Amino acid sequence: MRRTSTRLADGREIIYFDDDTNAPPRTAVDTRDLPETAHTAEIRRDPLTGEWVAIAAHRQTRTYKPPTDLCPLCPSAPGRPTEIPESDYSVVVFENRFPSFAQAQDMSTADEVVPGLVPRRHGLGRCEVVCFTPDHNTSFAELSPERVRTVIDAWADRTVALGELPGVEQVFCFENRGEEIGVTLHHPHGQIYGYPFVTPRTKRMLAVAAEHHDRTGRHLACDVLAAERDSGERMIAGTSSWSAYVPAAARWPVEVHLVPHRRVPDLPALTDAERDDLAGLYLDVLRRLDALHDRPLPYVAAWHQAPVRVGRELSWLRLELFSIRRAADKLKYLAGSESGMAVWISDVTPEQVAERLRAARTPQDHPER
Ligand SMILES: [Zn+2]
Image (cartoon, rainbow, N blue to C red; front, side, top):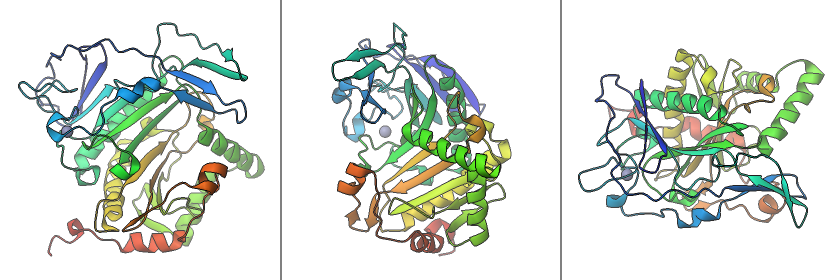
């Protein structure tokens, strides 16, 4: 893999990750006349829950479902400059033009209290876009294992880089896929957030892991993984270094966790062999998801990594893949119980979902047909 960092017309960083170290040098210049981006990212803490909310009102003007010939994530062509100046790329990462979190002129992390007992401060951090392929009309599941490996290396690179930025406490790599999930650009891409705080879900999971460790001296994720592998009831697929299973208390109609067998806090800590294994298993699982119904499954792929500064020794890397599609023609909406009380009601058993995913086969599995 070869990495080249350069700048867009408005100063944002863009980084090319090429599968082929002999790819042409990435020297194309952004010819657009872009206005300076005004970063007004702000976070406010809900005084009733203690949780931070990002207020990013400028995002209202962001690009919304453009026609294919105006896709900002395709490579540039003569007379049609996009966010990516080059005419080709493997994987490319650039700073989001409409970030929810951003570095600021005044890097103060002090709270200012506004009426209503609401502390607020700069939303210090960074938001990046990751394009997985220059091909507009494909999906992550259709990438080659080699390309997925480059994506994994890019995620690892950005996890280190964002973790070193002032104010960043946690790095989150994710992909939203499908209009049903709210995706506004069809080009295969994901995002990376550097949050200025440890997220509520990670805080909660670290507290539970700490309690388990105090009581047993063991890692909770290790015990759960061992139990899932022993029982096999909810296992989907696996390699010598990774397992994929439906969690016993799955919240979503389709939910799969990909977990490494060795405790690593984050993606940068994975070995080359573990990254190669992950690439193959990830593709296997995504293809099973797409084979569930007669159409691509909308999903969220969410990487749970250790925070930058706290809880690293208790953290165990995990990918959570989940979908809101509960039947070929039905979506799960987060209604009263889920939205109001954070209590999930599921109308399928995780064991049934695991059974269907184990049986799911894609045309790629049967080239002889
Ligand atoms: Zn495109």
